[in-house]
Image (cartoon, rainbow over all chains, first blue to last red; front, side):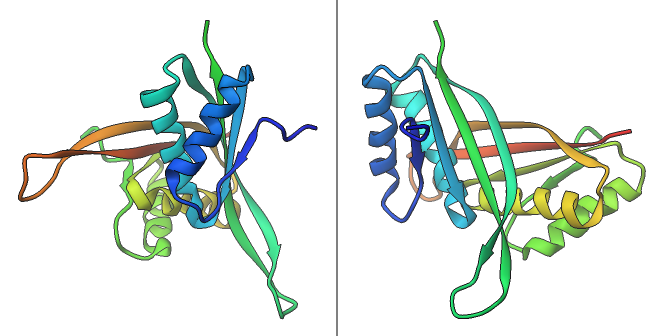
Length: 93
Length: 93
């Protein structure tokens, strides 16, 4: 599955997602992608920074891409624009 | 001054910082840097996305760097780690 190596940031506490990222690296993934939208973007950056500084020191951030996604609002016909981020972390040799 | 072309994200509403970024581009700066720490990081991404999609369509995000900064806590000897982001936007030809 394409998204096996992806951590989607949601409403749990930061360390839950750090654990998810660390677990992926320990399962021998060389690349882990952290994705978030809206207010979770700050948490995504925290997850990447904590993962590389405290747990997986060989991991570095190799790419950060932001985008704007259109989300359909519940109970209305409106769509809202939401910023998103994708942080790619890879093990260096 | 080195920071002339920099927008520091704080507690104001998002559009105040979008206006600041747009104003810098309109003053003929070719490069604008958006900086934020902690929970303001999500707002920094919003500012960059709104600036390039709605106002300065020639601007593109050319670099995004995250870091961890040590901040001295007020009224204590502790330092806390805070994530930061620097988003560089440049006019394309």
